[in-house]
Length: 343
Image (cartoon, one colour):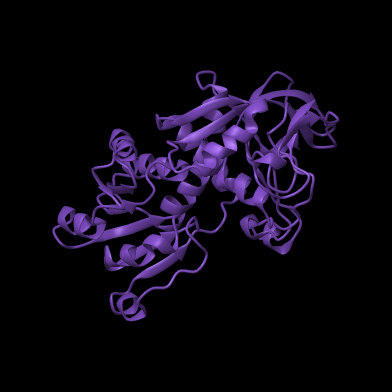
C-alpha cells in the first residue's frame, strides 16, 4: 500500500510517500481502507520532534482521525463485516491496568494512539482494534466523518464533562477557526450557552458568527475582556475554553466572573503560563485542566454528534501525495477548520 511516513524528525521535507507492506489484522482487529483522514496539530509537533507521546517510534505514519471502509476482519472481530463504513476512536487503552479496570481508562499509562504511537491514517490501509470503530450513518460522508474524532471528543470532554456548561451561561472561546474551537462553539450553542468567540482575523470571526457565536472579537486588535464585560452587564464569563495557552491566559482570567471556570486543554503558544495569583484566589477562579477522554465518552460524544446537526468545516481536501503541502497549511495561521487527506 501507499503511505506517507517519516523516518527522522524535521521539517515537511522529511515526509515521504512510499510503498509499505499491507497491514494484516490480528485477533480482535480490523483493517480499514482509509477514504479520508484529517490533520491535527500533533501530526506537526511529533514530526518536528521531540515526540510528545510515550511509545512513539520511527518510522511513523501519522493520522489520528480516520474514516473509511472495513476490508478485512481478524479473529474475534466477526461482529463487523467487510464493506462497513466506519470512523476510528484513536485512543486505545490497554484494558488491563488498574485505571482501566476501575473505569478511568483515560489515565491508562499504556494507551496507544492510532496515528500517534501506532500507524495511522496517512495511508491507504490502517489496522485498528475492532472495539474502536464506529459505524458512519449513510448520510454522512467520509470527509465529514474524518473531522469528528479528535476535535469533538476534546470539546465534549472540555465543555460537557469538565466545565459542566449549563443553559444560559456565557462562555468565551479562543482561536475560533481552529478545529477544536469550531467544535466547541457549535457544542456550546447546543448546550444553550451564550458564546463570545475570539480570533486573529476578520475572516475567522465571520466563520465564528456563521457557526453561532453571539459576540466575536479580534484578539489581536480588540479587547476581549471589555467585550465580555459589555455582553454580560459587567459580570464576566462563566467559562473560558482555551487551548491557546500563555498568550491569552491572564486576560482570560480577567474575563471571568467571580467563581468562574478556566478550562484549558492546549499549549499552542507555549507550555508555561504565568498569572496573577491574588486575582485568581480572591475571585475564587477554578482552573480546570481537560484530561483525555475515556472510551465511553467517545461513544457518548458520537451519538450526540449524529443527532446534533453539526456543520463540518473543511479548509482543504488534498491527495496523500500532497501531504507536505497539507502540513504546510497546518503550520500556517490562515486555516479555517480541518485539513483532510484523501489516500
